[in-house]
Length: 470
Image 1 (tube, rainbow, N blue to C red):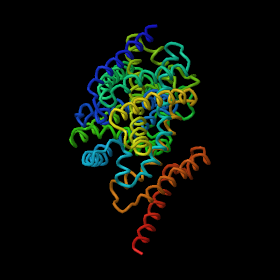
Image 2 (image 1 turned 60 degrees about the vertical axis):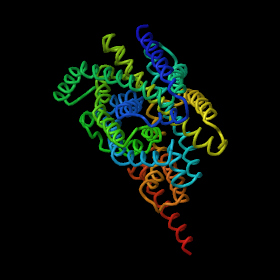
Image 3 (image 1 turned 90 degrees about the vertical axis):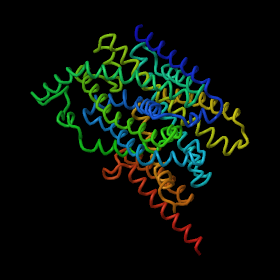
Image 4 (image 1 turned 135 degrees about the vertical axis):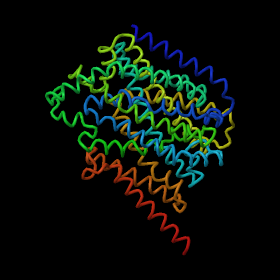
């Protein structure tokens, strides 16, 4: 009951803060890009709060439980990708968005290519983004299941209700302020838990050094190796690295920065924190493996550790941190979904004459609808990591080539960008299915897909330019 009371009070506080901040939202630019007034500090907090979510807490601790120290690469790869966002892609995109009044990544793709590219990206990312929203809600459900015995479907619904309630009222204005509170709770909760369990980790490493075995694992040496089996780090780096400098949800938060310095400083600090934080869930997963070696579901490692291996005060603090992690990323996904669908599809293709008030009603309605769909999908998908893997794979396959080519390669045409997306997504998903995720001769499917897409993009662009010259 203590843990359930903590969740209820914390959820009520987030919703109340969201409603309070929503009074600042008077027009669509406030909702979409916070009036382009986010400081480096607010940009840092809203990005880090979004990035420390289900995958980097419950999911990564589950990977630590199964794979050991190499689970660092799940969050660490996100940190490496965020460095590219901070010092290359982010400032360049901010300049384009500010100069041309762009609100979404779809706006940029239409500006650089045409409406066809914008529409295809919006549709592909709508399906992909629902899976990552579902992943956050699954993590909330696991927490509620362990703490209060609540079923997975109901847990997903509760998580969706909390995130939607404060996001739909104030958009990026509300999310940025609530995220600052959530980030404080996360850093304190995980930091104190990390310090408290440091002694347990020291004993585990000492015992392993003495007899070179651990919790019945067949290859304990690889378990305690930073690089694991050698394949896992490459797989995570390819899957997650690009996603963190091309993700519309992150880029659109950058559109709200007040200047380039805020982008570099805010995003750069976010990257450094991710690189450091990456050790925490891996560490907690290893401790959970030592304490509870027979868990059937590895993603219950963190909630179980919180409930059964920590004093109530620390378990409650960590519970607030975990819950904040999942809900803050859920609101980031709702931001990406609602702004893209309302601006990139509805206003562009269905009702171009929609005024500011009408667009605000539409975006809020879409946020509520997407929250409900995310809860439904969360009840169906098996676990956090499987949901996130679908998202990151489809995101990189669809956006990597058109976004980077749009920013850095002037020669690429709209038809070339479309060909790149279609070939890259089709090749990646086909190869994933044919090899059950193993890739082609050990090479990740995503790399093969992007290579195939780049060939298609170059070929189509070359043919178009030859026709124009002829």
